[in-house]
Structure formats: C-alpha cells, structure tokens
Amino acid sequence: MADLSDAQLAALEQLTAITNGADPEHERAILESVGWDVQKAAEAIFDQQPQAGPSISRPRRIEQMELDDSRQGRESARGVPATRVGLGLTNILALPFTLTLGVAAQILHFIFRVLRIPFPRLHFPTTFTFGFFRTVRGGSSPSSSLSPSEAADRFVRELEEETGAQSVSRAVASEPGTSSAAAKAREAGMLQHRRILPDFYIGSYEDALNAAKRDARILCVILLSSEHDDVPEFKLNTLTDPEFVNLLTDNAIIVWAGDVRFRDAYQAALKLGVTTYPSVHFLCLHPRRSNPSPSAAVMTVFSAHAGLEQTAPALLSTHLRATLLPRAEPFLQRVKAEQRTREEERRLRAEQDAAYEEAARRDLERVMARRREEERKAQEEREKAEKARAAERKRLNITRWRATVRPSLIPLEMGGSVRLAVRLPHGARAQRSFHPSDSLEGLYAFVDAQIAPAAAGDGERPDPGYRHEWAFGLAVAYPRALVPPPSAATIGEVASLTSGATLVAEMKTPEPQTADGDDYASESD
Image 1 (cartoon, rainbow, N blue to C red):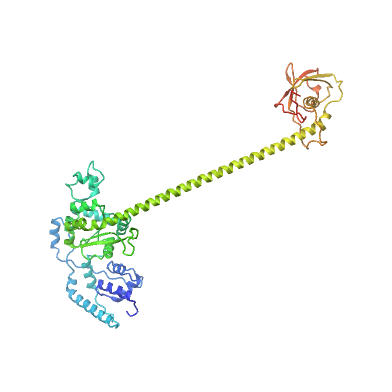
Image 2: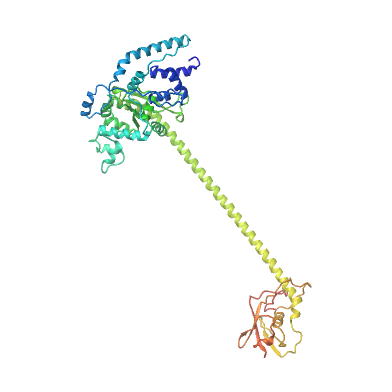
C-alpha cells in the first residue's frame, strides 16, 4: 500500500470499513477501476455487479438461510406485509470469528500506519462477511430492472395497497364536484373521512432534488427498507397522519420516497448516509458562507430523522412548524423573489429584443420598398427613354421617307381617265385624275402628301427594312366601300374606283400635332 496517496488510502480505509476488510486487494482493484469513488465501489460490491474491466473477478453470490418464519403468519394476519427477519445460520455461527478478525485487522492496520510500517496484506474469509453486511444494511442488492420513474410509481401503488390510503391529488380527484386544490377540499371537509397520503414525486431522486432547487421548495426524502420491522408501522402511522400530510401539502413541500430494494433509492441512501430505517430527510436551499447571495445557494440537508421514534408523526409535525418552516421559508422567499426578478428581467430583455428585431425588420422592409420604388422609377425612365428614342427614330424615318421615297410614288401626269376626289380629315378636299394603271400605293402617297406636306430632310434614306405605316384608310363615300390597303395592285383593278369616286380619308389614330411637317397636320393647319 506504500504506493498509494493519502486520499487513496483514505478511500480504501472507508471501503474496508464498509466491507469489514474482507479482501483489501480486491477492494483496491475495484477502487482503481471506478476512479477511487467509494460510493461506486460499494455499489459494485453489494450489487454483485462490479464496474471493473475483465481483469476483476465477479464476487460470488452468497445465498442466505431464513430463520424464524413463525412471525410471518402473525404479521400477515394483522395486515402488515411479511418481512425477512433474522440472519443466516452460517452467518450467526461465523459472526464472532469474523468480528474478532476484523477488529484485530483494523487495530493492526492503524498501528502500522502510525509507525509508517508496511502492513501485510491479510486475506479473511469473505463468505460470511458479505452476507452479514447485506443483511444489516437492509437485504439483498437493489433491483435494477425498473427505471426511477417506474420504481417510484410502483412504490406509491404498493404503499396505497398496504395502507388503504390514497395520495391527496388522487383522493381529491375521486371526490365528485370538488376543486383541484387539496386545501379547499380539506376545508370543505370532503377528505376528513378518508385516509390520505402525501403527493409523492414520481421520478428519480436527482429529478426531485433539481425540482426543489429550481422552484425554491423544501424537499422531503423518505427512505424505507421493506425488510425492516419498523417500516410497516411508519407507513401506517406517520405517512397517513392527517396533520403531517396537511403540513407537507399546504407548504408545497416536494415529497420523494423510495424503498432501498430499488436502485435509485439505494443510491440516495448511500448519498445521504442512511443506515437506519425508516429515514426522513428535509433538504432545502441554504446560503453559502462565502457568498450569501440567493443565486449562489446550494441544496443542503436541513435535518435528518432516523428510526421509528425520531420519525413519529407528532415529532415531524412539530419540527416542521417550529423549526424547519420558520428558518427555511424566509430565505426561500428571497430566492423566489430573486428568481421572479430574473424572470422579469429576462422577459423585458426578450421583449426589447423582439421590439428591436421588429424595428429592424420594418426598417429593412422600408429600405427594400424604397429600393424597389427606385428600381421601378429607373425602369420607367429607361422604358421612357427607349420609347423616346424609338419615337425619334420613327419620326426621322418618316421624314426621310416623305422627302426621298414618297415623291417617286405620286403619279406625275394629271390627265388620267379616273377622277378621284378625297375629303381630308381636317375638312379640305383634294382632287386628281389618275390613270387606271397607277398603283394604289401612289393613291395613298398622294393623300398622305395632302395631309402632311413633306419637310426638309437630311438627304438620307430611311433605315433599311423600314416600311411606312399609313395612319389613315380610304373608303368610297357612297355607296360605302373600303379601298384596299396600299399594294402593287392598280386603280383599274378596284371596281369601285374605275369610274371615279369620292373618297373619304379616315384617320386610324388621333391626329398628332405636326406643325413642323414631321407628321400629319391638324385642322388648324
């Protein structure tokens, strides 16, 4: 053991004290496998499920002999569940020898440590030692087949069956027409005729501890052992005592209970150092000495009560009223006030963040709307400029067409046999004689020249591919008949024109202002 540190030696001594120094080498191996955690090592030994690797052998399971079964019939007749009593016969016979060897080993170990002399590793029989300690500590290894929530729910249901009572919430729910508040139900006298139990927290011990810390409430931890003789009386008297149950309920105390035959309750017993059953612990937030602020408070065991005498209902009720509540409630109220302040601050920050995000969103929407409006206006300006350029190009082509192309289309000779009179859009009349061989395009060019005289051009011809669009149509006045649009056809080929006619020039679009001669003239011209 000389190679171990002081902390490791202390852990080994603690585990050796728990197991009565059965096998120090084996215990050291288990401690090394679990990182020198005494609690985990004890669980590995007593659960018969070591957490060490393959190199650690599995402890042998020792079957215990049962004695003195005569009490089971009497207890069952009284309605009290039968419990395992007595030690195994082999353990009883070996108990003096085991205790003598264990005490001698501990004394020698202590003397050798004081003198700094290496202590020889002594191996004592473990068969009786482990069986004895399992019996003293409350029975066989805890069951691990159920989850903490399932184990807690099973414990409550078994407790209700054993005591014939119901939890407060279930009792209130079963009463017709009652409120969901247990206090109101009791004031109305609806539960006076029934046996009630506290509302137990259904979940793990750690969850109940965290809930008490989060909500700044007192936690009552009740640990029982079904193999202990005092537990049935505790269940029937203390857990169903109306005064005790009312104090727990009215003060919103979280109640968590369990039987150490289940793993979660067994681990809670190890953490709280419980060795006597029944056991009642009260835990609540307590300020640190170094930092008394409520935000730095830690869960602390306020009081512990073990054994049937200390867990009597009258003593627990008096302790709650006179000691626990007066001392714990003021600080818990400070914690709750600080929690409410923090919650209000978080709510305000959340509202401010939401308002900031909403303002940022609206600002972004305004920026995007302004940008879209600017883009729309820019697009309109581009389209307007494009239309203006197109209109200017069209005007220029029309001017060039009238200056260069139109004169060549109008017939030069005036002595034709077909005499046509045209009433122009602005009311004037124009007459001309055409040859039957003159083209319709020449007729339209003549009328176009009467409506919009040619302006001085720049000497250039229209763009290649430009086709002049006629802004008017011609029709025979009576009987009305449309003249075909300009084409290569001749006037003589149109039956309504061969004998002469009076035509009407009808504008297809409103007359544009063409004072400069670029388009058609208005009536004022």
